[in-house]
Amino acid sequence: MNMMFPKPTKKKRKKHKKSIMQPKGDRRCYLCMLLDGDFTYKPYLEEHHVLFGNTHAFAEAEGLKVNLCLDHHRNGPAAVHNNAKNARILMERAQEVYERTHTREEWMKNVGKNYL
Image (cartoon, rainbow, N blue to C red):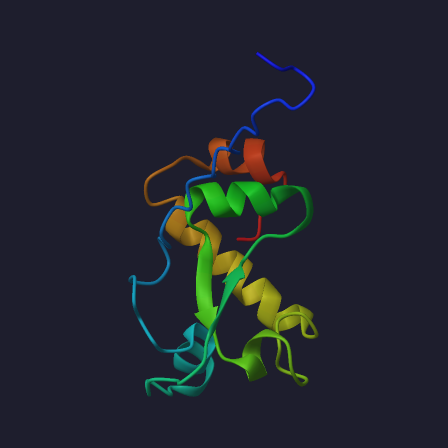
C-alpha cells in the first residue's frame, strides 16, 4: 500500500432539517404573506436562516428557516439583511414556533436571547 497518495475520504454531509416555519415546497414568500397579505407563488425564492452568527447552525439544525423573495431577503429597504425590524419579526416567529415543542429554557440555552 502506498501511503504517499492516500485515498481521499469523503466528508460527511450535514443533514439539513426541513423548515418548521413553512411547509416544504411552499413557493410563497413568508414575509410577503405575513406583511403584505400576498399569497401568490413566486418564480424565485431564497432560503433564509432566521438566526445568524453563532446561532446559524442551531437555526439549520432546528429548521428555523423560511423562503423569501429577493425584495424581502437581500434587495431593497424591506430586505431582512437591511431591515432590523423585519429580521426581528422573523426571529420572534421562530421563537414562537420553536417553543410549541420546546421550553423557553431550551431556547435561551441555545440562542441566548429572548425575542418575545
